[in-house]
Image (tube, rainbow, N blue to C red; front, top):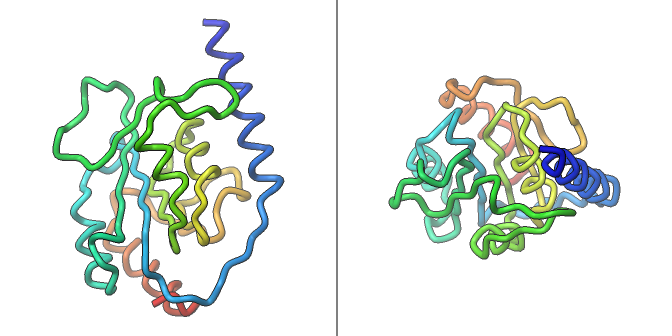
Length: 172
């Protein structure tokens, strides 16, 4: 139990280091690639995002969706990539090759579609090499470049708001 607390503190320090060192350099380039991070406890429809970005003109091959689950036993073999708390080590170390690949991908836009505070989700979002990070309202304002204030169940409202902001920012 006490090791879990030390591990969580270690990872939180790593997240703080990443967020404090982050250089925000949002470009005016059109959106060609998108990464999506979901929390399966809040929202589990991968296809909603795939279809939405296809409508916006992003190639399905350039759209990657990953999901966080609490227990690996709950995984669905149809999902692209999923991760759980066991995929994280000390000081931000990632023990999942697919997850590390997702983090290293330089997406034009990263969507973090979750509201529950989770150290693992925050770590993936903070560590991502994405150019522009969009998320739902969180306590830590440093994580995202754009935050949209909707509930995870209001996916239609989120899609409308996201399209509006991406249009204003000349991303689509």
